[in-house]
Amino acid sequence: MKLAYSDVKKTAAKLKFRTQAFIDGKFVNAAAGKTYTSINPATGQPITQIAACDSTDVDLAVKAARRAFERGVWSKRSPAERKHVLLKLADLLEKHLEEIALLDCLDAGKPITDCLTIDAPDTVHCFRWHAEAVDKEYEKMAPTGPGNVAMIVREPLGVIGAILPWNFPVQMGAWKLGPILATGNSVVVKPARQTSLSLLRLAELAAEAGLPEGVLNVIPGSGSIIGAALCKHMDVDAAAFTGSTEVGRELLNYSAQSNLKRIVLELGGKNPQLVLEDAGDLDDIARQAVNCVFWNMGENCSSGSRLIVHRKLKDKLLAKMLEVSQEWIVGDPLDPATKVGPMIEESHLNTVLGYIESGKREGAKLVLGGGRTLQKTGGFFVSPTIFDEVKPAMKIAREEIFGPVLSVLTFDQEEDGIAMANDTCYGLTASVYTQDLSRAHRAARALRAGTVSVNCFSEGDATTPFGGFKQSGFYGRDKSIFAHYQYTELKTIWMQLA
Ligand code: NAD
Image (cartoon, rainbow, N blue to C red; front, side, top):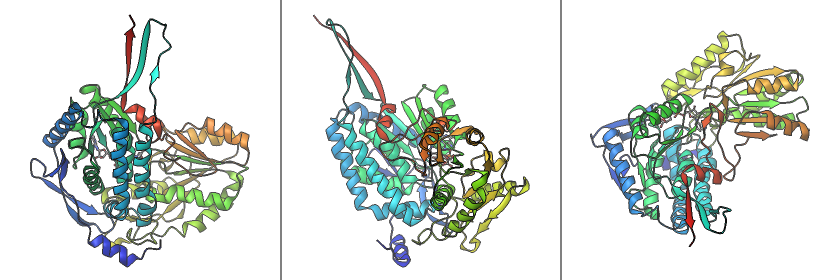
């Protein structure tokens, strides 16, 4: 489908926003009546005012979720009944795909083409996948002697707090909510302060699909206020978090300080793209490598922000990448031709520009971009940027930048390339390029990351778990049946036979 920029702008101008908190099946103002301004990062202008919840709202939402859980309106429905409601939700999301895509485009500055072809369809698919999985999983009987029967069953945890990032607002919502709801839990969601609009609309559609009141609550507001209150709450059984390693660390403290709730964390990354000496088609690798770092403006936990390439291939590959980079048009996210939108907010723009300055200062060679662009729009745009001759000790090679900035490093021996790839406190994703099957296997095993892609950049699909090693996560795995397990408790029922 070919979209016209003018049509997208017209549709966006007619959007209606849900701006109140969604608690116990109703849209309500924050208890204290406060609001905050949501800003469009492409213009720097306000989009709307949103309820600024505080700990009172957290408590109301947790109480509603607990009531729903105890009444069993969802937790005790059969898996097939839950499937039915979640499939209906997926259908409604699909029906309103354009609206959902536009909400994330405006709120997060994500290119509309990506929102329409990746985020929104993946959200629909994610709900369908978890819905379909839930009545196909069997529980277990233990191999006891004839005098006993022992069943090993899984039960929902109870009330879960889900804390979301701003980079894939609705899609990360689905990655959490799909398995949380499919397994019968109630949930209180805190979207990122910058991007609450699509989650509030999703809650409304969930109610329309038949999700009972209180099962899904959405409370917008500040992370340090309501995120912390939710994670410290004594009646929340688990917190599922996607965001920075820094805040993830805090969540473990909150759990220790409160009721030892289960914490599952999906955190940051400084992901390597390892190009071995025998890598195949360099045109294809150039496309994949550029996509891997500039897609979603580099505001992506799986961004391949370190290209670690064999010295013999470096110049040729880099030349091709510079050519391909010209296709990464920076512009208004509402324009279907745009591939790179703005940074999420001004403070993050300044952080990314700070990293670019540090790369220049530390002696890396700037070969593309290197600064702010489209300033007249009022938006927070950064030009796609590539540094060559980066050394492993440089800040741009070590820290997660979360912007469209690539560091190119070189190696001579395969072991050194792998060691360089693993030389990070993170371990979320990695790519390796080689034509040799044995090398590919060896490297895939040696790379310390939750997802390793061979001859491509991929996060897998709904059937595969996604989460990180080392400081990229803490027991957290989104997607696949493994995500169901982390939102359930194992129970043994041991029976003595007469
Ligand atoms: P962030 O950690 O600043 O915020 C994430 C969420 O936590 C937001 O909802 C925020 O309001 C909330 N929060 C902030 N302070 C809090 C506190 N003290 N207590 C509780 N909640 C708090 O991260 P971000 O800037 O929104 O997202 C970017 C980060 O997320 C990057 O590091 C990125 O790599 C990571 N990320 C990881 C994955 C993954 O699957 N591993 C996916 C997307 C993003």
